[in-house]
Image 1 (cartoon, rainbow, N blue to C red):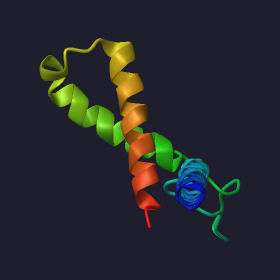
Image 2: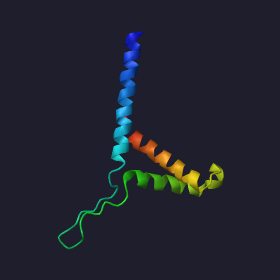
Image 3: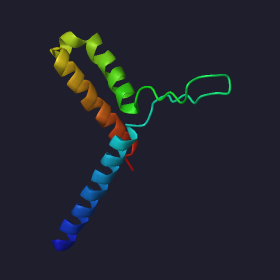
Image 4: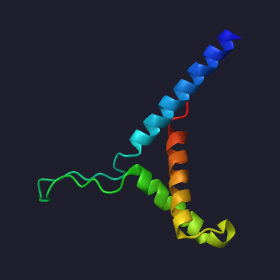
Length: 93
């Protein structure tokens, strides 16, 4: 039984590491634009990947909001939950 418990603990720890890595990756810019020799004030980081995913999810939720039965605050919360799930799915083994 100890072997099985240790095996499960290792799997849970691995999943937690992958999930945390996904969330950290979500803080990276979705569409970074570097400054060029032709002008500009520096690198423009824009949206994070997490924000981009949430915006896409929110678009889908809002297009069928009557089906979801949600108010604005709930739509935003669900959009970020979906974004976090998409980030986690990116690092699945």
